[in-house]
Length: 61
Image (cartoon, rainbow, N blue to C red; front, side):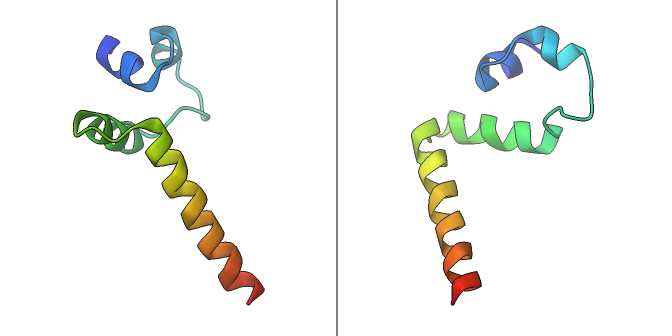
C-alpha cells in the first residue's frame, strides 16, 4: 500500500479508509503503469486536456 500511496502522491490512510470517492483500483494500476514506463503527470494532464478538447469540438460541431 505504501508504493501505491507514493505513486498516487496520497497518504496511506486515504487508501485504508475506504469511501465511494476512492480511486478505482484499475485506474490506480493504470497510473502506476504509466509512471513505471516514464509517463509524467504533466503528460497525462496534457493527454486528458487534449481528449477533452476533442470531445468539446465534436459536441459543438
